[in-house]
Length: 151
Image (spheres, rainbow, N blue to C red):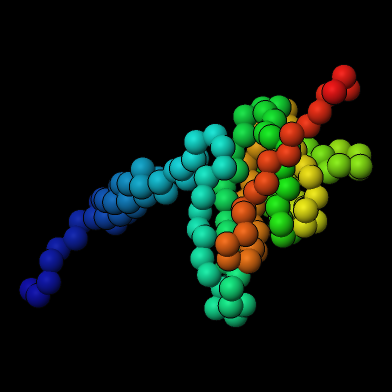
């Protein structure tokens, strides 16, 4: 006789063994989750600041902005346009002379060059990516002192 004898319970035992192997593999796959995405500390966190080869004398600046709920920064402006992409929470953009605008997760907003604005987070806080193209040597940001109604 060539081969092995397989009794009546062989198929059931084989199926049960395969089922256990697949269950073990699936359980292991669930444990191997992707690592969490780190959240940088509150504030303006530099991502990169690089020269642009296509525009000599210019540089691209990227910042990861994290603000707590209802947090507000200092009024300022940039010599060049600023591009805001909200990753989470919301931003309330206040440009001088314009009504405040809410920018929510997944939305973008362009702040014109030299427009005085005050960064402000919505009630859930804010996480956003900010992009700016600057001429090399220009200041990244120019603070503006706001005067109260008595001054």
